[in-house]
Image (cartoon, rainbow, N blue to C red):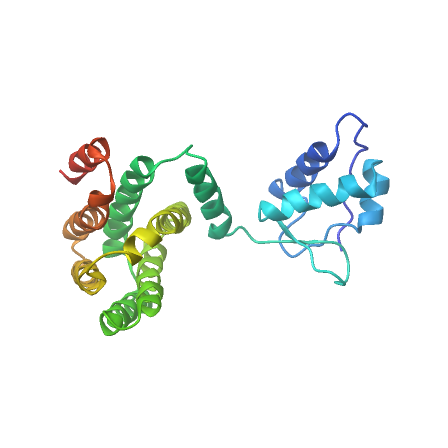
Length: 250
């Protein structure tokens, strides 16, 4: 375990200052993923604070996706690799608190997917293309029979596209925004009067995107990606949101 020294947190600056110092140590690279923080007792000594303060700070850091605490584990909490799930939780929380609306999320997803598909058409590897096709085939097989399998296959296809974009930030944001949107509208989709038709249309749109990417037609791949987002989500947006999507679609 690496030795990292922290400065005492004064009494008026409690767990938030503990969080700030540990977060800074992680983001600066002083502590890297896979490393372990000192034990609670060691942290109490270094920060000159109580055990409840340290535990609250660790709880916050864990909720941020920066560390993982396992009861009975050897050493202190483990520092985690950056994860799309962390950003997805942030997007979802902001959406639930109405800091972000579907009017914000859907157009952003449209821009991201369009860019990712254009990049994937130019940069994909044979292995990435195979993953995309696997997702499409599984989607088509699950239409009308297994909604959960269909959703998993849909995610597999899009994750392969985002990975093939070659841009880590596009991939990270794509997965995060997709998760936030799905969380918000999953019940609406379940209540659809014709879920089989909805799934079939979605699979057909993704099949078209896949074929454009396979043909390395970046322009067509981007156009179809924009059309797919519009077709899937425009009915769920108020008039103002649809006008925004219209502008992006053109």
